[in-house]
Amino acid sequence: MKKAFITGTTGQDGSYLAEFLLDKGYHVYGLTRRTSTQSFARIKHLIHHPKLTLVSGDLIDQHSLTYAIQRIKPDEVYNLAAQSFVAASWEQPVLTGEFTALGVTRVLEAVRLGYPKAKFYQASSSEMFGKVREVPQRETTPFYPRSPYGVAKVYGHWITINYRESFNIFAVSGILFNHESPRRGLEFVTRKIANAVARIKLGKQQYVELGNLESKRDWGYARDYVKAMWLMLQQDKPEDYVIATGETHSVKEFLQLSCQAAGINDWHSVYKHNPAYDRPAEVDSLVGDATKAKKKLHWQPSISFPELVKLMVEAELKLEAKTED
Ligand code: NAP
Ligand code: F7E
Image (cartoon, rainbow, N blue to C red; front, side, top):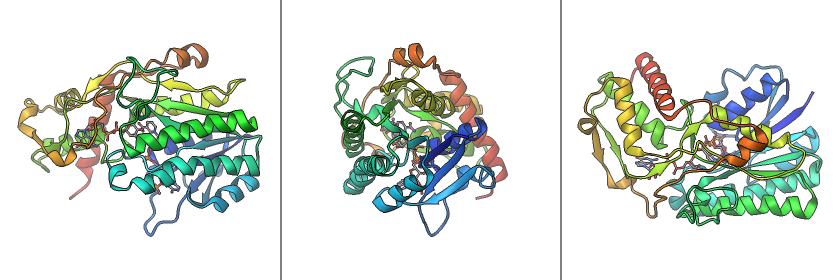
């Protein structure tokens, strides 16, 4: 039986990846950090699974990581934990660097010292492309990050490549473009819109306050993206891959389609601009070229952009209908 160690198990991607690997028969060891209230909402349906073991630790605690990997001897390590909210990275730039940048080195050190045979996956991000140097963005496009988060991810990306080249570790970096789902954090724009639109439809809220409606992202479905992570670790050679749909859409389009999906005729009537959500430096437009992943991993997205929006709005309508404020 294969063993996988996931950091960030309680997050959007970690929860889908844990499900995916458990379905494949893996024993999954999920790193969780101690908090005064538990953050297990996304994995509550898995908690009693006989092949899921939660392991206590933190990305800033080297010993907890090295000890876990020494003990578990996992075949695969997925480093998904991070301070992942771009807007918060201007408010907490040092913490973002600790978790999202140096945290990667700590997990790599744990692999190097604890079990160097493990294959390692790093959750790199399209935010590294920032002020884009090429359209669409691919594995060879130069980086120009626009936030402390993006800068931290560039560090994580290169230290992963460095450990591959220095220590011969099977370390890969997946450059994933935005991927969404009903398990997305409520602070991210897609879930924020889907949730607000559902609440407006049900009469629980009047409007949604947003920042820049013109920014464009290449949005895919999180379930498809965790499969790509696994595929990268099943290859003969460790290589880096861009994972994206190849389509770009604006925040405005996401809002319009969400309103349509909820049966709200005029999106203007439910939207207000709030400059508090504008960013000090914006990433205006991203669109990825996943040709390499399609060719070598035989990976492709399973749902379209309108289907993703509909799926998210329908999930919020169900959720909001059964919860009281
Ligand atoms: P997410 O929902 O924000 O989950 C982040 C996870 O990291 C949570 O489980 C969180 O634990 C954990 N974590 C944060 N700080 C930690 C620390 N110091 N020690 C241990 N665990 C810690 O993020 P996501 O959307 O699933 O993304 C997964 C990874 O992919 C992240 O590295 C993100 O930066 C990257 N990424 C995401 C996207 C995307 O579109 N989703 C695209 C490209 C790259 P708690 O539950 O305790 O907070
Ligand atoms: O913003 C604009 C905002 O916070 C998307 C993370 O998973 O994907 C994510 O980063 C866009 C930006 O995601 C609001 O200015 C307008 O242009 O949903 P977001 P993100 O910053 O693209 C990448 C790939 C990651 O790696 C990250 O971890 O939407 N926007 N109005 C807004 N954004 C938010 N959050 N809230 C607003 O009200």
